[in-house]
Length: 448
Image (cartoon, rainbow, N blue to C red):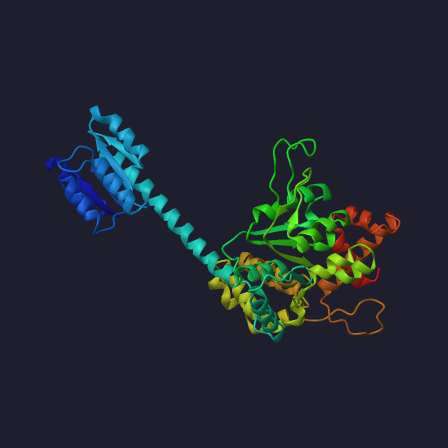
């Protein structure tokens, strides 16, 4: 590490310099406080080791100047027994630690080793943050015609405050599209707040979205600001909007139409400046026809519909996506695993879990690469031969044995749950541990 040693006592200065050089540190020495401050203006040091009492500027002056120039510079102060109080003051000003003279060199060495480990951890965290930011900026991956069309739409719509309804199957990346719209909008420097309707009961959802006043209900001991207030000036992303309770839909409609709402237990209207983006994996118009969603709210949400294609409809993007996920998880060295045989198998599979399933597969590749289990995993996930389902009289089924078996088992579980609940979808969803919207989507696909 680059160390600035400030010590006016010649013997101590030479002894410490030799010790630090022996430990392979880069050492700059000076004996006057003013000289040290001058060096701080022209050089960067990892660690400053300074006496408190010096000719000219004091050790506290050096500490103050060093922290003003760079918070990353670590300062250790050296003090005689009688000036420990000043050393404590130095700690309050941001010094890393202090050494009371005389001290054993090993104690200083231990401090420097801790500092080195801390800097290494901070550097690794900074690199990880930069890498994550880099991947987060690439929220939409793909070069297929369907993805190019989607990106065009996002680019056109992002700049204006249109309400957007993002539609797509589970795992296609609806939240990523919402984040892309926010990132490309004039609101990008303001909050992006997300809420999943299926994950919260109606009573809690109302309080979380709109907030509540003190005493609004048992346990409301103080006023609570909801998501709309916390997202002031930014974007609120409401996922699984098809699960938004009918009883609360008029309040959401008021936000969209009047740009205002009332907290739970409140009486006065609160103005709100947010952009609303919603997402659904079911046919929301069908929900309107079934009486489960208000038509007026649907038409307010559906101003700009954005549909995300499922992965099976853009298989041209498979290699690009898999490469992205391997790099995202720090496995660039595993890119050689993408053989022509694997790519063929990837294209033969329909990816019912969409992009999320592909990322999970990438993580399994990384975990099992180089083990005996890797080939088994590939073979089980993507068999070479399609499965002809029993009783199909030779009809060609493009699903893999694994996919077909899992679909059959899922069909059996759903049918059993419906029988047990007398056909009650809400009760069946609860029995299966699924959101109602997910079960309705599966029922629509399978016509159970």
